[in-house]
Image 1 (cartoon, one colour):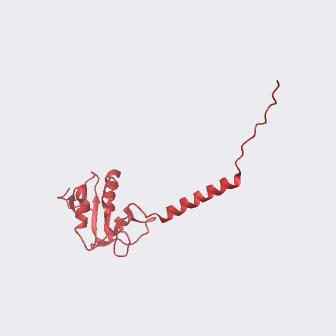
Image 2: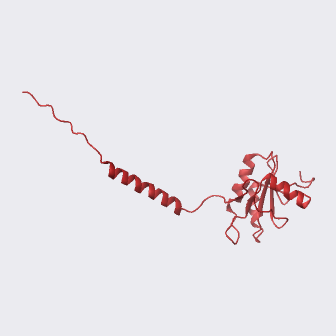
Image 3: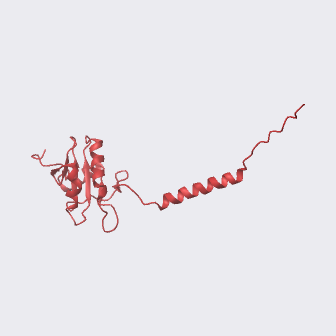
Length: 155
């Protein structure tokens, strides 16, 4: 008995429905991304040294020194108590974070993480400012002193 070779039917997936499903999935991902709440710390970072003028004295100045220690308005503060120290000021002053060229990256990120829970100002804009080194130098020239340099006895 001789069997005929059967035809192998090739299964084809139509292209139009697959493209339609892919398009709907892409649209859904874009929509969900646009509607999801923003997370993380919203900073005001200068672009190319151009930004708003730094506050003169009506602000909270957080300094990250080269050894990784943190100062708030010239006083040493442990990283764990930084958020509590900043929250003691209910006036909503801006928080200006200054670093040196030798500040460890991990210490700067730790400070920014600690400030992530700080609520925004009344206008909804972040209170945390991260100026460039050029802006800090310009501000020091205008004021005649660097607001981020601690007094000699603190170091």
